[in-house]
Amino acid sequence: MSPDFKKLLPEHAGHFINNAWLACQTTDDVLNPATGETIAQVAMGSKADADKAISAAKNAQKQWAAVPQPQRADYLHAFAQQIEKHKKALAALLTTEQGKPLSESIGEVEMAVTMIRYYAGFGWKRTGHVIASNHPQQQAITKEAPLGVVAAIIPWNFPLAIFARKTAPALIAGNTIVVKPSENTPLCSLALATLSKAAGIPDGVINVLCGEGSKVGDALVRHPDVQLVTMTGSTRAGKIIAKNAAEKVIPVSLELGGKAPFIVLADADIEKAAQDAIDARMANCGQVCICNERTYVQRDVYDKFMQALKKAADKVVVGDPMASKTTMGPKISAAEKSHVDELLAKSQKEGGTIFWQGKVPSDEKFKGGNWVAPTIITDLPANATILKEEAFGPILPVVVFDTIDEVIALANDCEYGLSSYLYTRDLHAAMQISDALEYGEVYINRYGPEEVNGFHAGWKLSGIGGDDGEHGYQLYVKQKTVYLNYKS
Ligand code: NAD
Image (cartoon, rainbow, N blue to C red; front, side, top):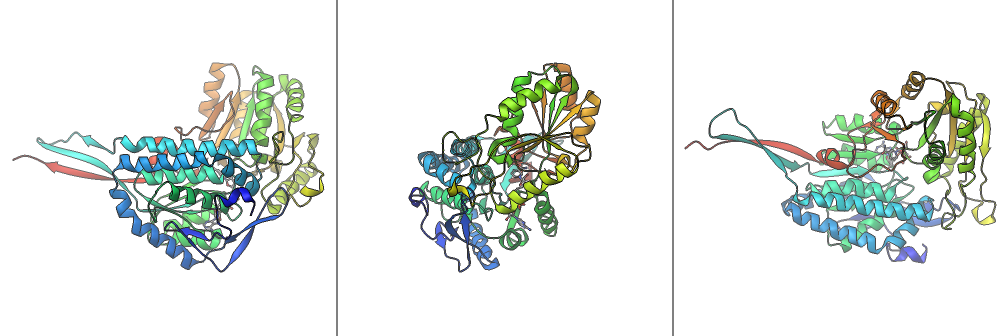
């Protein structure tokens, strides 16, 4: 393990349960996606390990819920402070384990801090309502109660931010949590767990269980003591989780895939739209659920837009994610790289033309990395696979359209419904199109990221439930109504 990370993690980290390491006999390699080198060994847990993690969380929950909410907020502030203190080491760990450029990793650490501080702000929040009674000298009160043990199953694309996004609301509401990180990026979760211990968060409140989704993830979902499953990941896994959780009749919150349309009307600021189209496609090597997955440009400005798009694309620097000039790193894994390579080959077979393509690093050091050249592809038929299926990589298809009705139909002809983008200076068009888009998020004249006090929630196959803000918090509590008769 690189010396930078020794500060954050022991040489052989197992699971993190009850504020202690639990060794695991079965381990797997964690790889650096830029080089293919092994950076650490990580536990590949069993159902028995899942039982231990859940039992720790269950034993801690009542005591944690008894801590007054403003004091739970103090713990979260202390946690955020620890993360800030170790910002550089965490960012370096994230880049080494996940592959995003260091500048993006710094941004993700800051996002994690914001998410924790935001929910710490709920410490003094109202925790119920007084309801007018229909009877004299009576009152009805609704009170929030924690659910109990929360299982958070998280992906590899934002391993620090999504850990924080689920842990902070769970804890402020009085739940305890077992986080199951992706097999590709367990170290980020383990590092955050150690920092939560340093912040004084009591034993069993935050636990990290490592291993395969189909084993330990599945064990968490099916366990009788888990009362909420909040998962971010693929629609494929989300469907399995929803089905298994239904057997227990517990709530699930699923943040799944996306296929964001990026619409540019003729009156838009073309330079800005083109720059944002590239940024929104190439960020994190295209591995963001809100990425620009397909760009639609109105015919009158198509040529002008494509020139500006090329200019913006020429600024993409693919290379060593640790280098400050790099703007795009590798894909997370060999399997993910193959998926994107195959999709590009298929797009060409289906009639697509490569309009622009960047380079991948040629140095010997990066030979074993999962590199994909950023690419812009045009001339695709309306039913091209890349216009329907999530690419999750730096390949941008661009399609020309004529009318607003046509582009609304194209944008909505999709089984996903997470994010969408619209560029125009026409207020009427902006609001009318935004009303018509069947998406949980519409960004008008701006790229993401989503904001912590919004509600990040997908429609259609992009999920149910959601994260962030007051709506996101409500998923972590149940309500109790108390009817009180005070007539003497
Ligand atoms: P994935 O579905 O393969 O894995 C996500 C998590 O689910 C992992 O921890 C995995 O181990 C676990 N898992 C897999 N099968 C499981 C099962 N049967 N039971 C329980 N747990 C299981 O997804 P991924 O490849 O890690 O992430 C990429 C996907 O995530 C993309 O589709 C992307 O769009 C989506 N994503 C969505 C959002 C969002 O906010 N909507 C954010 C980030 C990523």
